[in-house]
Structure formats: C-alpha cells, structure tokens
Image (cartoon, rainbow, N blue to C red; front, side, top):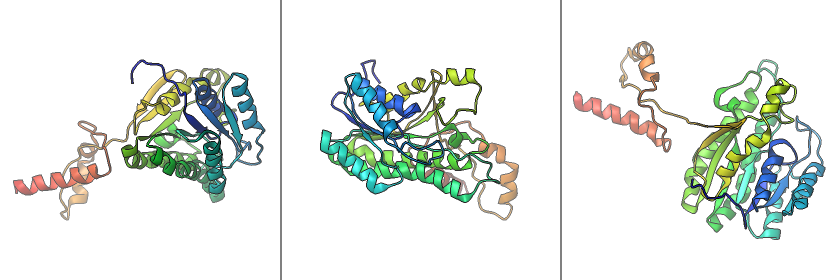
Length: 307
C-alpha cells in the first residue's frame, strides 16, 4: 500500500450488521471517505431475536447529517431472497456494488456440553451462511464490473478457540476457508477477498470484560484495518487482526514435515517423530490447497530416487 489517502469516492458499499457497534463504525468511516453506503441491520437482539429497521435508519441519519449518502435495509442475511433484493436496491439507486463488508453476527455462547444443536446451527447460519448469501448476491455483479472488495469478519475465537464458543468459532473459521477459495476464484476479475479479525467492545461483548478493557477496545480502533481491506489497493487473501490500535496478521501455515513411508510401523515412527513433523522451521503459507499434495508427493519421489 502507498501512503496516498484511502478514499471511496464513486464507490458503493454494503455493510451488514451496521446498526450498531463495529458495523456502524464501518459504515460511518466508509461514508466519511466518500462511499455511498447500504446500512443493513435486522435490528434484532444480541442473540438474533426480534427485528427493526430503526437501528439501520439511525446510522443512515448520521451519515446524511454529515453530508454523506446512505440507505437503510432491514434484510436478514439468512434470507437469500431478501439479500438479493438489498443488492438490487443498491444497484437501482447507485448502479453498482463495489464493497461488501460481511459483519452481521449473533452470539449464543454455552459450553459444547450444554449447547443445544439449534443454537449451534443458528450461529453458523447467521455468520457463515449469512456471509455466503451476501457474497453470492454480489458475486456475478462484481465479476461483470471486474471490481470487488469483500471483507469477511472472522474472529480469534475461530482462529485460536475460546471456551463456550464452539458454534461461533466453527462459523468464524469457516469464513476463512470461504475467503481462501473466493480470493483465488475472484482474482482474475479483480475481486479481492480478505478476512478481518476484530477485538472490539460492542453490544456482543458487554458483560464479558472489565470496563477499563472495554474502554481500550473501542470499535473505532478496528476500522482502519477494514478500510485497508476494502480499498482499491487492498491485499488479497489476507487475515488482518485489529484491536486497541494494534494490527497483526494471522496465517495458516504448512510445516515441511517428514517422509515416513507407509510401512507397518509408520504409526509408531510418526508418534516418535511428531516433534519433527510439527516443527515450524521452514514452514510456508501455501498459495492454494495443492501445496500440501505437492510437498507430500515431492518428498515421496525424492525418497524413491534415493532408493
């Protein structure tokens, strides 16, 4: 990225879950830098119940009061037809959709032992399928206009785990897998797909942390990472982490491993050499899933030649 100002003049953005918290800050920041913004929010409670467009409309009012352009939308991201109608609403008004920030989410935290499967499925439906629905609804359009920037909201709970969030963590890491493939498929038409892992104090984290920690984790501190991932000069296939003014990157890596063959005692050999197999010395960040097979076959062929 150059040091030139990031601006979104002429761009149209959709931000889901933008009625409050992090999504609201995303919408305000994009609008402040020139984007026309669809502020999407179901207006439900933290657990996903209920719904009202008033939260989204309040953010639209803020944007318009500051001289920006925005429209409210109350679609549930789990309703593909409603999401398609939202995209049509944006295109009818402004002619295109350049940016999609998949931010909508809910929490149904419980230990796995106590969690009802319905609560597991609902969280996956909102976070994963909600992002799939919104992305599918803009994908053909972005391919046609040969431009798109899509930000998936992942989480440290998905990347690294967190007690009581098996449903949320599973959905959030699934979004990384979705990003990995879409970033490959979209590259030829300049659709760049990235993930943002925020640490922010929002309605979803109230009561989970001490107040002084919540004060440090202002949602505004995450926004710069979103702006970089949504910008014209955005990277592709990056997992940016952000919170309290610190920015990091997460990587899914592959170790060099060790060739052990397929003999009768291979399980015992693997157990004995597990530290070597898991050693991070010389690890790589694969550019596609084929890297694993290439490494494995390459080692097998090299060993065969030795024989």
